[in-house]
Length: 262
Image 1 (cartoon, rainbow, N blue to C red):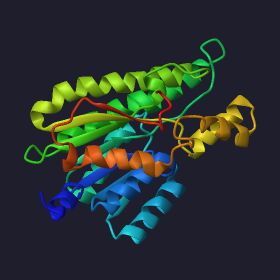
Image 2 (cartoon, rainbow, N blue to C red):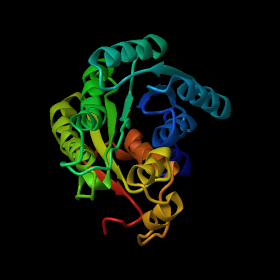
Image 3 (cartoon, one colour):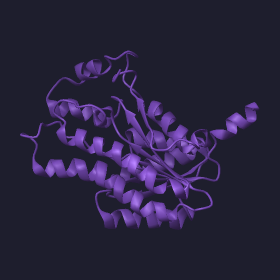
Image 4 (cartoon, rainbow, N blue to C red):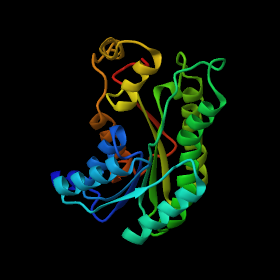
């Protein structure tokens, strides 16, 4: 296989990607990496100001077409509208990255019902709703790739994060179920499970727990590869699943955590 052919396997020229939670953190990193690989990217987020800024900066830095759409992924109406707007802009969708998520660091006794609903609705229901409305726009002659962003805590438990662990565990098995259902339509569905990644979401956990942020981040780096992850670390795994490098991979879960689960 020639070097050019190998390079082409990672290219996404002519593809259209939709990324949720794309205004910051992992979602923004994923949107940027897919754009660098040649995809046009619809960035969805509830934060309009930061989302529009992200879309503009990615377009300027990569030359890719980008489009921001305001979306609350826990609302069916909002998801349906956002997908329709993305399709009006780009005609179809090849890649969906279900990344939007929130965390509340509480056990089940201390966790308010509203916070349980928020975490599960954004992370798990949001992946269901976005997939529900995107899949009909994935062209049968092209297939598609759906990448769900799970978590290491979707594969094992974690302290004071009951709703988050439940939602991310659901994401892992939802991935398997969707892979079975939609494989005959050439739609691949895979899951990336990050470990602690340096994002505003991770740093917010220190505030929720009432601990020093610097100490919290040092403890998060206590793993075989002695650092926390970066959005680029996760984006590279997403690119693998989005590209032709993984055409016979579906229903898989890839842990990207510097050896934390090991």
